[in-house]
Image (cartoon, rainbow, N blue to C red; front, side, top):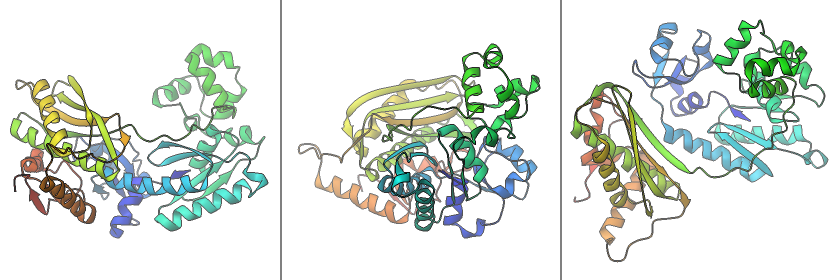
Amino acid sequence: MDLDTFFVSVERLLNRELIGKPVLVGGVTDRGVVAACSYEARKYGVHSAMPMKLAKQLCPEAIQVKGNSANYMQFSDIVTDIIKEDVPLYEKASVDEFYIDLTGMDQFHGCVKFASELRQRIIQETHLPISFGLSMNKTVSKVATGEAKPNNELKIMKGEEKPFLAPLSVKKIPMVGDKTYQTLRHLGIRYIHTLQEMPMQMLTDVLGKNGEEIWKKANGIDNSPVKQHSERKSISTERTFDKDTIDVERLKGIMLAIAENLAFQLRRGEKLTSCVAVKIRYSDFSTYTKQVRIPYTSADHLIIPRVMELFKEIYNRRLLVRLIGVRFSHLVGGAYQINLFEDTKKQMNLYQAMDKMRERYGDRSIIRAAGIGARTIGGTNPFNGGPPALLANRRS
């Protein structure tokens, strides 16, 4: 199952004026990249991972929307919860893609009927379009889902895998990226039926071990199991600047604001982290990362100082900064345990009040005053909402 143009669909739920119009989701500057685009924009040759500057040249009337990962995760979690309630075994391959094992369901409900009802439930409860492909294995199901889009479903019967795949482009095969596709095209291979007719050894001679896997997938052979879904183990945010900067105070402001937002995401998801990492990429593309283990926590006043310490340790004032980021890993479920000797009731009440405001008015509705500099780097907000409605400082 795959949510159709997921990021665009979420943005349209939040802004109905985007419906029916070409939409580009991603970085809104010339350095930005298209994370997702609507079908209306694809007609002009736009696709994901394309530089935003080129996408705007191909489709000048497209509406650019800065992505909001928090919103996408929220809707993804809703869909995941629906699937979790209904199916015996599922694998969450990405934020918008799921493999579901329905082995044995035919004798009870019928796989097609079950999958169709699940799809309709997701659509009704989330108002998001979603497609599915049903077959005997993961590869054929993934390709079938792509062929079913937009917002439809497709079943490939046992024994029909090869005829279904044969007329499709070799680029439809999972594992075939741009480089492999160009290699195959140089060999005169354009469609999957050509791969099906080739000896496996010929493909392995050209592509090595991957050649065997691609040959099997082209022939509809895939014995990989659906892996039981496990909870995510890390969360992170990175900020690439419109223009490289050396303004250390504003860099600190962005770093603090990112850490504060991620800590809120931990508390909202009832998670704790025990590993904090900071990343800096300079204008010469040299990249430095440093991490430190900490006691499990989701509290700002414990996480933010460690983030700022790491930033200070790896920051080099002699070079312009292109990107900074923060990552929390080794996540576990749980709520922050109050320290009887160090934490105060006033401090805990402040967290609760701030989090309630964020839940109601958006992630960036309230921030610490020290993070206000994050709003002015390159003239844009590093986060995806509008300007904060209130500022908060722990001393206030």
